[in-house]
Image (cartoon, rainbow, N blue to C red; front, side, top):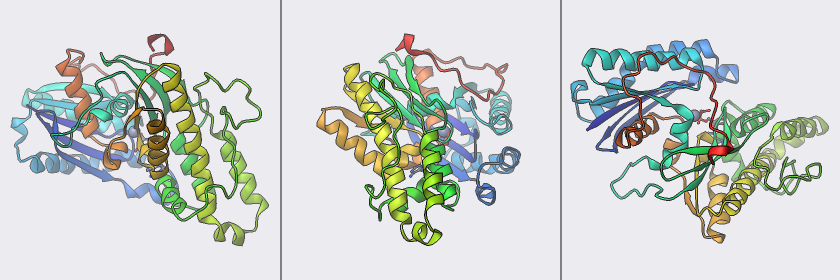
Length: 351
Ligand code: KG4
Ligand code: ZN
């Protein structure tokens, strides 16, 4: 059984092949064109996907050592994402599936992140078997949910302003770092002192303004952004330059502190013994380490995919298609599906 996954929701053109559920190839081409603009330019992203999609899909099929005709299923991201970008991968997948008479499966990109703990890159991989808390942290989303054994899930918290990835990218931009700043801050933070400056951690036990942080699983990162802006304004450029690693480490510590506190609090409140962290920000080394430390103290298992499966990738798209097909939960051959930009996740009632 071979499944081709295609992902083009933002600035990564990716295609992957699963062979009997295991990753046989996962090609990711990151668009560098956006660096000059300090953020993703939607029209340029669509054009880049269009330029790259054929060669990326060919590379994934070749690396898996098969022909396109050996594919059984072709799955693609249908949203959420930049509409023009999603459209390139979705239409390509539909066209290919139709022409080759293969099964076409549309996939929700955020759900694919939520279930990325199921990506099987080696035969020994153990996917979650129990109920788990999922923290999904990307450039566009920050969301905590409870995922049940039957793969249904309910959102118990989300950001009320910026996503965690945006908090990294925007504060990094203020410090003059390249886009995306998340990995750059991660690198700098390794050399810095996380206690150098205490930046605000909204809606947590540290926040002085919020009395009702308990059982509040929403996030807010806009105050951190403002605080970093004021901090930079109050200091000489030479001071900022000299202490860049310390400031990066302090920003990272504030973001990571919020993410870990809320995730662990949710696991404790709902008496859930497993946590999965996914989305681009889960590539962050500080988040991985702090989450593992906090969870191991409480006997909570942690699932975090390898960094290459944390950021946008097609292996997670093919994996979710496979999971849903194997449990009869997919809607195959839905050629009417329109690409969508935003995502109305199921509310806490399903938690
Ligand atoms: O999931 P993703 O690749 O794309 C979206 O669906 O948004 O996430 C991209 C986000 C960016 O904000 C990027 O700065 C962040 O993930 N990111 C990181 C790291 N690697 C990627 N943030 C912090 N530390 C990292 N190592
Ligand atoms: Zn993503």
